[in-house]
Image (cartoon, rainbow, N blue to C red; front, side):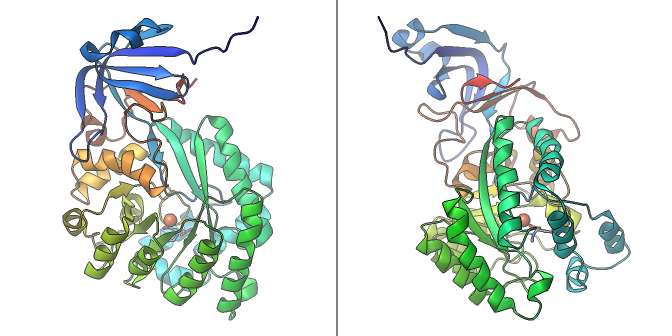
Length: 408
Ligand code: NIG
Ligand code: FE
């Protein structure tokens, strides 16, 4: 005799829930309960309202004693897989050299490309794992990783494979091809040919199942809007969504271009114009703000947070972890910096690491504590969600649940 086993039901009670169920506010629920069925949330809300028929089938109950529960944290913009480090460049910048000057002199991204090309896949994996674990220690459940330090088909594929392997740690990993990150030395003086090459890699990377989205660094020191358009056209022909490193150091009109392609997100955005904001609002493109890069490059030009709010553009946050402009691995610090530097509210900041980060990755199945979504959530030793943006250098994480299962 065989029977089809129903997914196991697990109930989490006595929780303070920050559900983000609506478009505004925390969606705070005191004395809340979460009913998990298999990998999904079957029900979330005030414990007193849990339907009796759902409670009936519960196999296991965890009493959280009033602890805070939030959606699992999502880092929607990282460059986590690379060789080497750039502390010498940090010293140069402290002595007055700018990020742009270092890049033009052949340092910057190019120096990381040399170290990444020289590293084997196992070595890159060994370097990436502790970085991912550091993010996980603060509640990471979904991670985006960009290529862009390989800059050849083989080296980009190598980095994307390493990124995908990180899923074995107990995460969802999304990979983005950022072949158009910098010009590799062998293409010196042949920038358009390099762009053709990047466009040519995309079908192969897609065939190998290594790419969920395509990104470009559109900037004076990187690729022009016209070159960006060509990469986006190649992505569109393959049905791949696009994202853009836009208006980080100057206004290139990149955000408006990306919006024209229905981009999932435009990221950085310190120099974003009114036109760019309007185009993003029309397209539903998420603004991903990166306080780590803003801080570490000692930028003074603030992203236009109030104008983004006024236009109704969803705002996400991310670490932008990379060895040049943001060598940090703390999502909680991003919450704090988004509030102190960018004057976001703690609620906007946490929304930016959950529901809006999910949007920036095109993942509507997560980011809120709502029935039907993935059961990815964090349990914190905190009474109110604003505490997550308040403390810095202190980690109140108690436990993470991924796909319905407590992570060891
Ligand atoms: O997001 N802006 C371009 N790319 C990275 C920096 C990469 C690097 O400096 O290695 C960023 O800030
Ligand atoms: Fe970046």
